[in-house]
Image 1 (cartoon, rainbow, N blue to C red):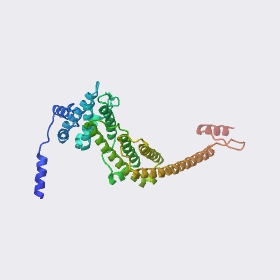
Image 2 (cartoon, one colour; image 1 turned 45 degrees about the horizontal axis):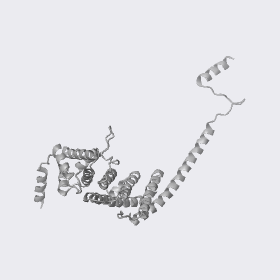
Image 3 (spheres, helix red, strand yellow; image 1 turned 60 degrees about the horizontal axis):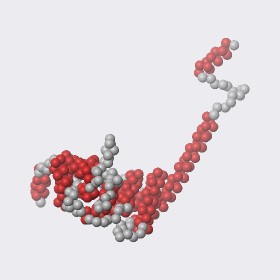
Image 4 (cartoon, rainbow, N blue to C red; image 1 turned 90 degrees about the vertical axis):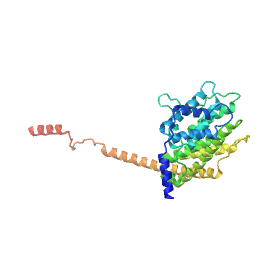
Length: 336
């Protein structure tokens, strides 16, 4: 068995990584995001061809990332092509979830806002809404915004070792990020029309379920370390958990349309409410502690000021001069 494993490892190490050019990347992207058929999502074998760029060199991964971003920008220019744009966003979502590390890294670089020009490939909030393609265009806007939120999430998930090692401020920030994803999915436009839109709906539902699972894990972790929170962290935690409760309440109270996203698990909402109430007590306690410290410092400063006030010189008090003036006064006294 050991010999077979060594042979397999040697084969994998000696096999050359595939090399792809920029032309190969543009061709693969064009096939995966072709306009015809407009209502079908990217096929599995086309997505596999895109994923293969992550098994090559860094240049191959960068070429694919640039080709996808160029295709997305081209589809959003002019009157816009919502079907091509939505296929690009679906492909980006799949590659970020299943791609190799080197491919995900290059996609993050390509999708980041340009520091000089400020251009953001995912800034599609004003994507034109056509009458015939209203559903697809609406989901282009939503999917781009959701992808922006997904890029803010950490690579690690709900592992206990990872969460226990996080500092309190980072844990609160991650809790807010996952809660924002879950809240955004519940505000998605109604899914209507083609299989392409329903594929975007399926991916969004996966993101919602994963985000709520991570919210639950971080709520539990915050409940275990409430006594270690500072005043600033406790205030931020209260605000985040209140948004979680309000989002769940708004979803439950909304009228039932033809399609409605599943509400957040009631156990998670109850846990968030319980931790929020306990965090509010921490805020009150930390506020009282800081007020006592400030009052003690103020009293100490007042006492120091009273000690440092010089007394008014009386008839029998000696007036102290500076060193030179004191020497001059002594010399004049000896002369007389």
